[in-house]
Picture 1 (cartoon, helix red, strand yellow):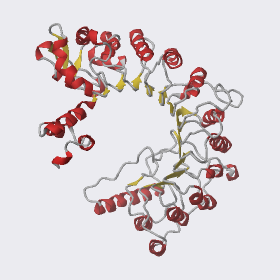
Picture 2 (picture 1 turned 45 degrees about the vertical axis):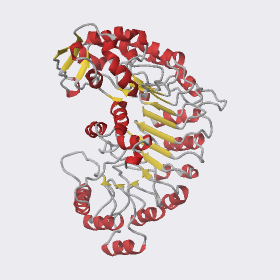
Picture 3 (picture 1 turned 180 degrees about the horizontal axis):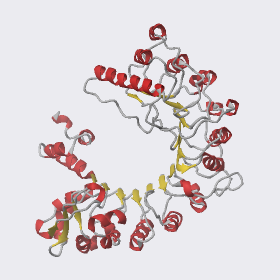
Picture 4 (picture 1 turned 45 degrees about the horizontal axis):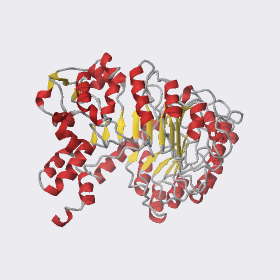
Length: 545
């Protein structure tokens, strides 16, 4: 082991998997372990505590404070007891500050620096220039004035941003911030930094404040920044000007618009702010839209060039969606994605799962349901999640086609729950998917369980390739008549399940018999899982699945 200690890559890998207490112990154990342990301890900070601990104690006056912010109690705020000198900071600046790579100040934990303390530090380090307290910082989460106001007072919060240059050197590549309308000094500090910084690769503009300053944000992105290296951006809205500018960026790979619901219809066959020369978004690989309707997503996709480099689409939508509208969406995906590159689509219709929101009409035309066969061209597809209500008819023909169409499929969902229509497939089609999709780990689908019997379960488990590697399963409110036989069927064929979703909620105090049957299956599956995996907790379903 001692021969391996001088190898920095090994030490760094070891340190990255240890908690803080273990790192402190390692740092004191061996001279080879000191530097990598300290590097790991200081790499990512979300409080001022480490910085403060390196400075003379007589520098500060400690004032007890309380705050209701996020349920935290702020115990201490520091004020300068005397003038701070560069000599006071020498140990920190020379030995610790260069180790910091990520910083999230004012995260409502432990000790915070008052405005006066920041001013004292600024005066002491002015000759060193921007980034004096973390010269090699690469990732910064700019404190929101609305949050900081809870910690150091509303008045101080409005001017605290002018001191963030203490931490922002020339190596920052990732920036997260939000900006409201009524904080001019905060906006001025942001503007100065964005104009100065030329290396930004990741930008996240906060999406959860009530009144974002949209003109300022748009000007920041389109006029201030040098964005030739920008790879990922998250925005709370989109506009024609923003869209045109983003479409021209040569390195942009990821675009997230997380507040799209209030926008006018910017993108359609008749209104394309991007132009149509085929050069738009030359490097785009991931597109995420949140809070709009499926027809508006279709309009945006139609404005993209044919066969882009996109590999991942994620949409959270609202509103009604008819089968013809969904068919147009499927065709738009086929238009803009390259069959040789595209690997993942996740469409989640917000607010569907959980309740029977409306009664099904008296008469239904099942012939109008959407056809997903245009997606069969995407042979590299690994995630196909279409959580949209009653627009995709899952037939035996569709199930038969899926293994050949998507040989690498890992996650599959066709439709959402609760489903009011009787499924066209049964347990044999379920087994067909498991037999012929060797990488399938997650499945959300409704099928008729009435044909499941003890004899067929024994036959399936013995002759058809079980057990299968399925890990996550959601059968929603599939028709069920014998919970005990369904449980035996699942245990025999899918013993590796680590998660089984709950049946959909229902309105009213009385649960339907179908829901009670599925609850029985799930409760007894938990018992089976606990017996097979003592001490382990079933894994939660991830966003990917």
